[in-house]
Length: 73
Image (tube, rainbow, N blue to C red; front, side, top):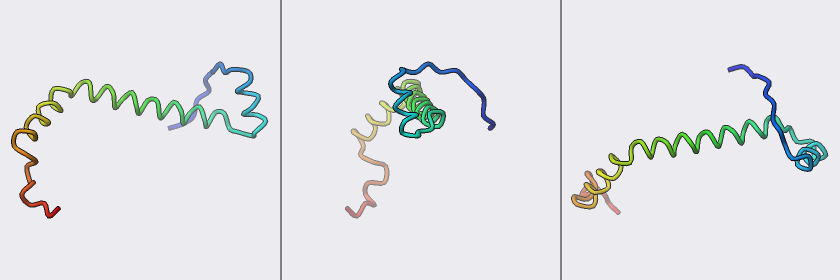
């Protein structure tokens, strides 16, 4: 995908420190937003699939792991 311009508002001291240190604020913001989006996608997926996750956990608790008898540890 290409890159687009967006406007961000930052604390003045944070921006000044980043400039002084030669940090690329655009790349840092992009990485932070990407990480936040990943965390939120995972949270939403877990919320949407919680009943299936619970059902599987109950099944494992009652019957052990499906291939547990083949484990060597």
